Image (cartoon, rainbow over all chains, first blue to last red):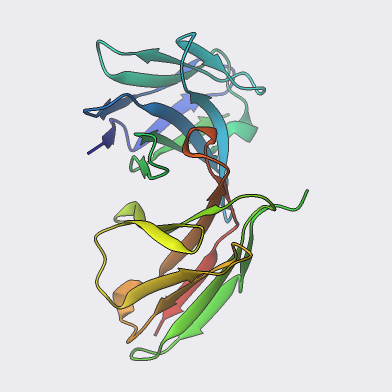
Length: 112
Length: 112
């Protein structure tokens, strides 16, 4: 069985500052890893995913995440955040059986 | 192409009633999953259907049920509603597990 732990429930950060949202997972099988973003009153949107190959994956809006197998982590980073990045971010893991398990989410607050 | 469509968007029901929620996946997606999202518990997996068969099931009571039709549309039913069933119910469709999910905007159910 897989599980996901997002270490911070809320992260405040000043606009244009860097941010890291932490995610650790546990699984007995090879995994696929995902980050989703949820804006207020909306569903979740896929931000980026790791399936195999390069351990560093990037999204089109400047976020990146690095798969670290030895530390079972998949932290999300952005070098400079904008007010529009205010949202809740969910880390998720799948063992390939089409069942995706989500973490409890991290609320990113951008301070002016 | 059209995204995942969930209807209705909002619903208010009384304790003891039953409710049916609908989800139309992206054309060509045969896997449909349902999640319950609440502030306290986060995103919890309800069940996943593939080609009209339930493939995965979460830890919810039997009051929660679902089905999938031959056109991949899915419905979720909750019987004997309780106050604690108030939540955002999210549907997601997938081409394959490793491609990630595409979520609908959700149905917000309020039980009074």
